[in-house]
Length: 312
Image (cartoon, rainbow, N blue to C red; front, top):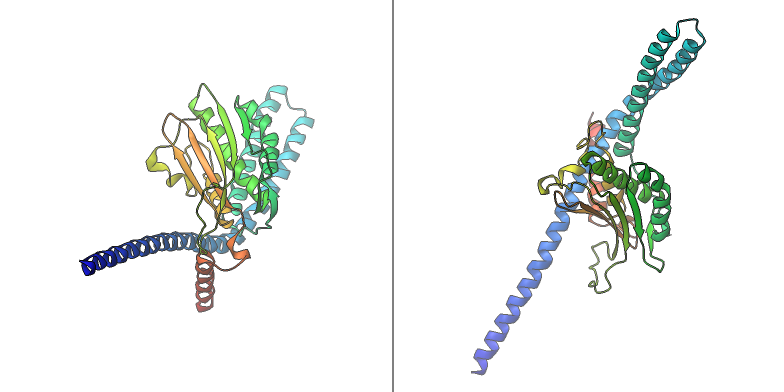
């Protein structure tokens, strides 16, 4: 029976090896598909930026001229001899033009931040300071919206290689989005928590082709929540659940996080609030230390764009 036991053991070993190999292959395929999707987004953004850079410049100049002339017109109305009622009417109309010009300028700036190239300046940073500084900065705005803002950070330093200013911008977009969602829903309890968590101590050693250990920043609110079918949609540009919103805040946040080699997840249920989780690699962007899947995909995109331009 020894040969039977041997055959069974060999078969079991082979099946185990196949299972491990299949799991590794599946993970690799998932990462490659994610890299391809990011590459497609990068290509669309590169084309969008190339096509609209000059157009944006042509729009900004007239907007600046409109703003200046509106200010001069307002001053002229104030110095005129018109009756007070007529002055008030004209001032309201001029202020409307000024507000709309400012709104267009803000939309244009949001678009340029989204479609333009993001240049990282990563450095070893204590993320506790990033979270605390951001909360101190945003707290007055939260209080104005009757939102209680709290932070929860570890007692010890949590250092990661990030671009601190861009990470603050990404998290700020999430805070603004959460505050507006709670205000729009008339939630009775408006609470906002920013929680910083280190990588799990029991996390298995990451393979060479992954980003490695990641820190997590949770932005948790008590708002209306997001239906499951909209979890992916809300990160797309120009998708906004708020009237008058540009729909670029969450898209910009995702771009910043992905440029760092991280990802953003969402856990949410309607009526029970949302938890946006920003995960950032401790070691920083992968392209600093070597070229990974995302970098190769991005380089392929740029090569295609250059070839397309030369063909024209």
